[in-house]
Image 1 (cartoon, rainbow, N blue to C red):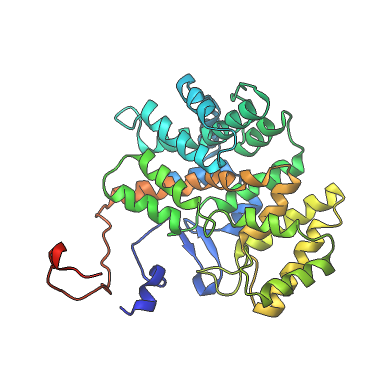
Image 2 (cartoon, rainbow, N blue to C red; image 1 turned 90 degrees about the vertical axis):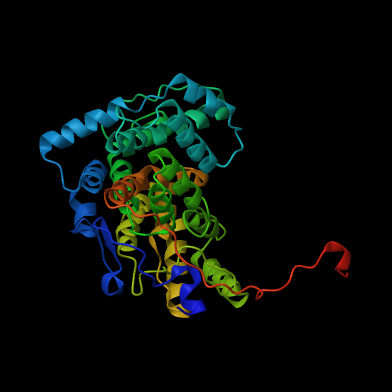
Length: 374
């Protein structure tokens, strides 16, 4: 294997999966055989999470029971609340997610009474609770009750964040976003989770490791960077001028292109339409037009398409979600995919231990310290 091919494992097949297909023919995304477009149009996040973790779509009774289970699991144990209160208010929210996951693993360890699917449900239900308990405690000194009666993860999160039930447009937009972010094959965080799982580590360790991988700006932070970019410009013309200057300076424009997709990101058009609807409902005449102009310039100048992160930024903004929470929302969704891969890795496990091409010094004699010059 050549050095360039090995870099970043680009193009290297590192295993088998029945969870998702990504980028077939340069486009396309399926979860267990179902098109992402069909799932975004007709399904709910809870259905999709069940599909990923259990391998099939639920019946109506199974879905009702699953939603009821998730609703019951939103509460946080007091020791975890104490931990979250000790995390500084100016900490990165992804540190809150990682710390909360690790602490819960110590309080409710995996074992005979807690199987992987049950832990997946616990984390699906409580990640939003962890983030917003910490947020409200440090922003206004409130110890909120995280047990809400909204049956959806989208409603639970937006309701806890704003203290009121969201309108139906924001609720559905958030639900679709969670579906789009739920799974994406052997991305960096998922592969990290599978690598940790292959050592026979517990479920929480794999999930915490995945959160750590997602924290990096080249993986999970692109939507935050996209929002910061979009908000720089007051008009589409200013955006075009600014992007052209950035390109001339060879600056990286976050939210465009993809390591796997060659033609387009199938998720982008879906979230773009939701961003447009939300912008129209908000009376926005700046952020969405600026976003479209940036997209046009990047296509014209670099032949690059927007990925899911780009229009997710404005969609989340119109839902009233602070930019620093964008990547934690990613965690709330992607835990469904991580769980599916942890379970799949365990079912046919072999320790993941790739080889490396050595490029260091050739064998040489050891020189005692007294004989070393310099």
